[in-house]
Amino acid sequence: MDPLPLLNFFSKHASEQATPGTNAWPLKGRIPSRSSPNVTQAFAAALDTLATLCVSRQTGQKVAMTVTIPRDNRVIITLSESTCGVQDTAEFLQQLWGALNTICMHRNPSPTGKVEKGHDVFVIVFRHGFLRLRQRIICAWDAAMKFYVHWEASTTKSGGESIHGRLTAVFDTLRAVLDSLPGAGTPTQAQTVDIVTQIHALYEHCKALSNAEATVQQWLNEYAHASAEPAVFPLRRYLRGCLAMYCKTVSLIDAATNVDFHDMFARTLHIKTLRPGISPLDYPLDKPFWESYLADIVDRCEITGTRTPKLRRALDEEVAHAIATAKEMKHGPLHCELRLLTHHQQQVLASPPEKEGELEAETATRPRNYIGTSEPPCYACGVFIDAYRRKSRGVFNFNPMYTQVPDPTLQVPWAMPKFGNAAVDRSIQRTVFIQFCLDYAMYIAHQFGFRRLSQ
Image (cartoon, rainbow, N blue to C red; front, side, top):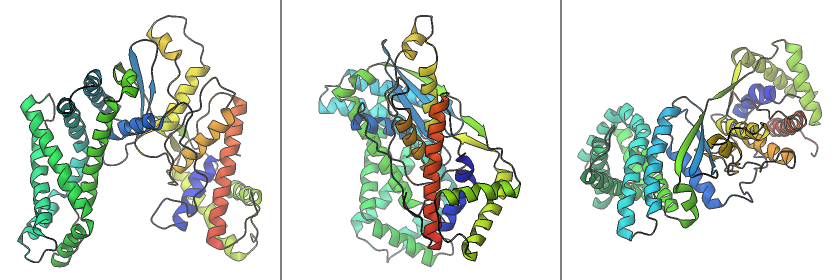
């Protein structure tokens, strides 16, 4: 059966009923393995880091990428995003790769030289990353300053002078860094050194405040108690964001100086961007269709107690909600990691080009079988990729792709790709449907206390 109605019109609603305010299942199912026989953990971590640093928007943007190293001197990054704005990401990636390439070509410098060559990387990353963090700041900057003025004037604030000085330094340094980071163009060497010095200082202050999380929360509580306005400035989240961006930048610089990555970072970058994929979710709106669909799921999972009024009412509510959702939800996006998966699979199935040159070198070379993502794949993507690895093994001349460990978050609408091999597509669809059924049955058993027979 088609798993898309179950996920998009039933599972999401069930998840919200099971755990109000979240999108996670109450019971986690089997999590696919991240390990791959052809990709090291270091490579996977570097690619995930690179994808994460590409994100420049506060919400709604997810980045996924793969790496292909053909026979020529290029490295090809195939880029897929969940939103528009790929051009901005590609420009950032080109700039960042240029700085990493410079570090890689001088991979045995002195400690001082390594620090100096990493300056450009810090400036590029923070200029791009602050586009996202700036959105958080500007929308709440007035509230942040009200909090800061109140905090400065308070004579009873908790904590010692040392931690007080850290918060003052964060606000001062934050203003200085935002003013120093140019919107475009290349800063001078003196400006670069000054900016990076401030970034290092910001990291140290944020780290100290993060370690004193209880004190920071007490300041926010004291402000909320004394003020008519709540402390809407996301201070702790911002501190963690600065720390994460700094640590990821350092890890990327370390990767660029690692001899194991020399063959990748020393090459000329070529970026291929994929257009987002959209699939229709066009289903009947008549009640008998949905009642039959849900009855089949309940029957497949052998759930006992379905004749009781309590569960019957719950299933009727599920059907009504599914019909209402189907009226509104007519299309589903192909999540960016699945867009990459189908792109590379189609390249394998396509006939090789007759014309020699870059295109032939690209299509004749398989990508490294790891998809880097800026955040973990969602529940459905994790189930699909795991099914794809198991059901396509030995069918395609292609190493199965891996990702970082997915989380149980449900992100709908969601569309399911096809690879063009009818037998494999049917097998994957059946496997995905069965897993969705079992997890949905877990929800029913968990919510209503009914027994589901063993798998």
